[in-house]
Length: 267
Image (cartoon, rainbow, N blue to C red; front, side, top):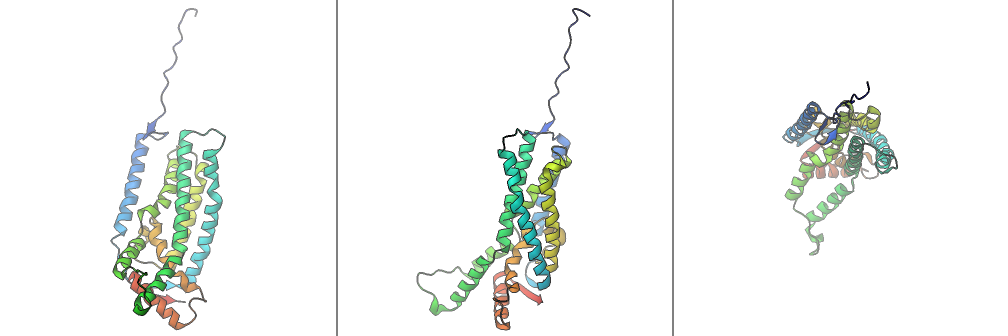
């Protein structure tokens, strides 16, 4: 009718928790519980004993290296997509920006973790300098080598895993949670699904090769505790480095002195 005023329906603001649109209070609480659970699992794994005799299956270790190469190739191929999405000319929503930042951070942390765990140069350097320290006549005044007890403390801290390295997994799990919470689509976090799937395979292969301490569930959610021992084992797959029984015995003794782990090698 003429003269009747049309009343506009009130605009309902989007549901938001912690400044993330699309995430309601219940979902934010569930996410907080997930983070607390991960931190608790990570913290409890630090009490596991990582010394003593540990079995090393060389054939399984070869499969670990092959699986790592697949994950490494995927990480290098996938890191550009979230970066291009963030910096691209197309407009993206705030929630898409946050999730892509989580995926980018996860991929970066994964690249760092994989490189650190499978790079044996630092371990070989420690081996060389430890031999020099034992030969007092060869040590020069300008050469300072850290006492073994200090070095061993640092090594065992790394072998127990670090939260910084484990953030690689937690970042991608956060992206997957965002998809299940409806913040973004599952397609938008495809990289997170792929990385977690490849990690599950790599974790299982790594546990079959060798396990230094914590249980299966602990190491599943703590990639650094699973992978960091590999740098002490990978040299055993190099026939040029381990050319005879004497060299093998010497390396095994070094690993025991450095980490407190005595390897029971099965080749």
